[in-house]
Length: 186
Image (tube, rainbow, N blue to C red; front, side):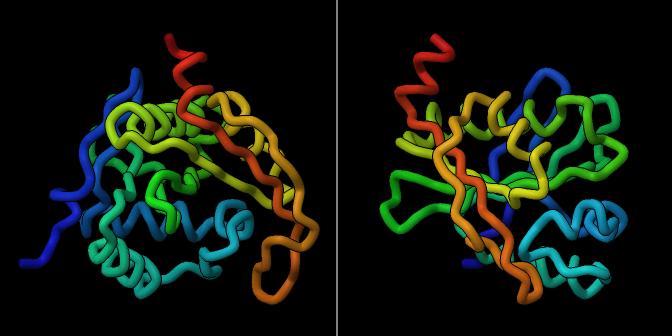
């Protein structure tokens, strides 16, 4: 039996957001938002330009994954995807890496911080994970502020730790342990 996104991706709700499984109806929004160079060029894996084949290939890829990838939508605009956030498990099975992107029209409104907090809550309280990490390119300090506002702590910088199209970028690492999360939210 083929596993579908809806069987592995729960719906998470925050004050203003709904995090749910991405689907084929999101393709137009994925191409529009991920295709913006201000989004794509701040990631290591997102191609630019971003085409229909990239969106359908990505959806095919995440349909095969066990861990959830969440489409982010505003509760006030149901069905309209504005970004993505995911948890990628590590080999130890007790930790994961969070990764995300958000469409430019939605920047600087606190949406990504809210989405990351929702995914951290899910990871620690529902999944029982012990540690979550996230990183960003040194040239993208806004992503680091999202991590800080969500409660994650700066860990280190790895010179040349990320590569985009053959060009090395410094990698800025953040992390958060489950006991630190509980101390912040109890």
